[in-house]
Structures are given as structure tokens and as C-alpha cells.
Amino acid sequence: MNHLVPEQMFSTETEKAQGISAVKALAIASQQGQKIWTITNDNLNLALSRINLGADSENDIRNAINAGKIATAHETRINFNGWVGEGYTLIDPNTGAGAYMISGGGNGADLFALGAALGALIQIIVTGLTDYGPYARLLALGGVSLSVLLGAIALVTLIILSVAITMIAMSDDKDKALTSFRNGILFSLGVAQGHEGITKWGKLNGKGRFAVVIGVLSLIFALQDEYF
Image (cartoon, rainbow, N blue to C red; front, side):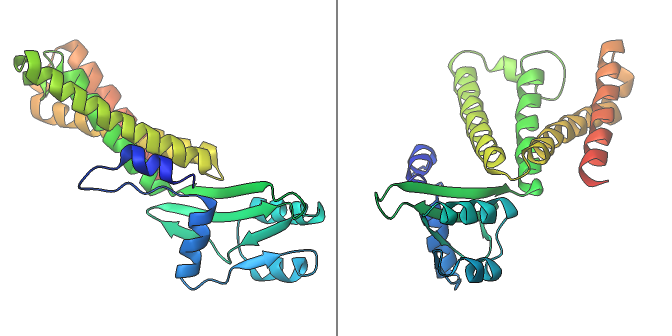
């Protein structure tokens, strides 16, 4: 199943990653007590009156049935580890070929949190490899220790980006999903710069103070854009 590939790629011995696919979404919905509909021309209108999926998914199902295919769908959207959406299949009864569809995406809070985590990593890298900021001592590690730390940061960054890109790609409103992720990054960077401004304003040079001002403005913009 499609969900097995990301699960195998990102699972560790202590923590199993969780992917999603059409078949897995149907199985989860069934486990939650939802009715699983097998939809044909004979029950199309009844089925669509009983299920409550996204409009795009319902139109997709209707068009497939009108083209002679058979659909399998659950009743309402599921929430699986922050992913909110639906899974359904569209099968040609004559050939057995078909499409296994998922639609939906992570909610804004999840993408905002992922963005904030990525922003924190960016802050660590930028300030850790310069003489500015609370992580400047990272340079003192040197050699193997610094390489291992940067490798770990790179791995976590890759995982965050992979999860975020997947969630954005599966989202019904990709622009809104991308905006939430971006705002999370800006929020995290803004918090870090605001902390610098509060604790070290008197010691900062012109460039440092300018960076703090930009960071605080980013923080304000992120909060305003996300919640107001």
C-alpha cells in the first residue's frame, strides 16, 4: 500500500512513522464505526446524500460512477495523526484498473507547528555558525562533534520538510496550508529575535538591532496572518 513507503522510510526502532493511503483511510473509518459504501449507478444519489466528504471528492465519485466505474467510500472525514481527509477507490469493473484516492490535509495548527520547528532549526544553524545569538558556542564544538550535530539537524529538517510537503500536497486548500507553514517559520524566528532584543538590546550593534526589529515584525505578521 502507498502508506507503507513513507512509514518504512521515516520509522525508527523506538517510534513508528504513520502514513496514509486510500485503503488505510477506509480501514480506519471502518474501525471507527463508519459505514463503507460501495457506490454504483443504482445507489449513487442515495450514497451521496448519506456521505459527507469534501465537495471535490463527492464530485469525483459522481463523475466516476457516470463513467461506469464503481466507487468505495466511507461516510465522513477521518482525523489520523493530524491529517484530516478521506480515502476512496474508483474501480473499472471490466478491467479491474482504478484509482486509489486520498483528499484532505493537515490542519493549520499542525503545519504551523511544523513551521515553528523548522524556524527554530534555522535559528540554531544561523546563529550557531556565527558569533551572534545564543547558539554561537556551537562553533566551539568543532570537528566530529559539530559534524554529527549538523547531520542530526539536517536529518530532522528533512523529515519536517517531507511531512509538511506531503500535508500541503494533500490539502484541499494548498495556499492556506502553505501560508500556515510559512507563518510557523516566521513566528519561530520572530520569537528568537524578540528574545535577543529583550535580553541583549544594549549590547547589539546596528545590524543586530535591525535583525531584532525585522524578527519582531515577522512575529507580528505571522500571528496577524494566521489568527486575525
